[in-house]
Amino acid sequence: MSFITDATKIKRWREERRWSQEHLADLAGLGLRTIQRIENGEPASDESLKALAAAYNVDVMALSIDQDEVAAKAVATQNAKTRAALRLSFWIHFASYILGAVVFMAINIGNQNSQMIWPLLWWTVGVVSHAVPVVIVELVTRYSEKYDT
Image (tube, rainbow, N blue to C red):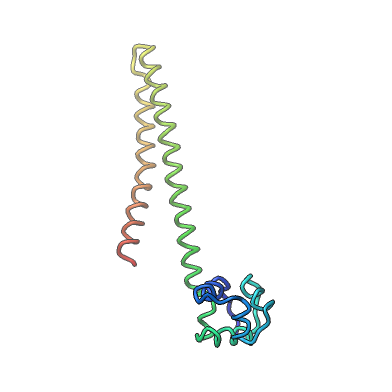
């Protein structure tokens, strides 16, 4: 067998049953130090895992980490970070746009002409074109969370 042992699951199951590490070691026929090492995430032998599975009255595979679940969580975390970075970049762009608009309007008022309207107009186009992907990504994410689960 070559799979990753889920140390948190083993510890959680022991605590849910209100067993001490000594009691689990006695039930499984293992040493206390072996239980401590397994719960700390160190690799366990096949015999130790079989003994733990027998003590918990479950299949040995129930003590393993589901690789698909771990991969799905990693992808979800990365997607969330990417969406957060996209939103942050938009809000930074929007804040600089507001500051620039104030400066451009002050220049327009001081010069009594409207020469700064065109740069402001094109900057508005840039902000809107930055907002569109943010909105699309958020809508797609909400749709997929609602209908894919």
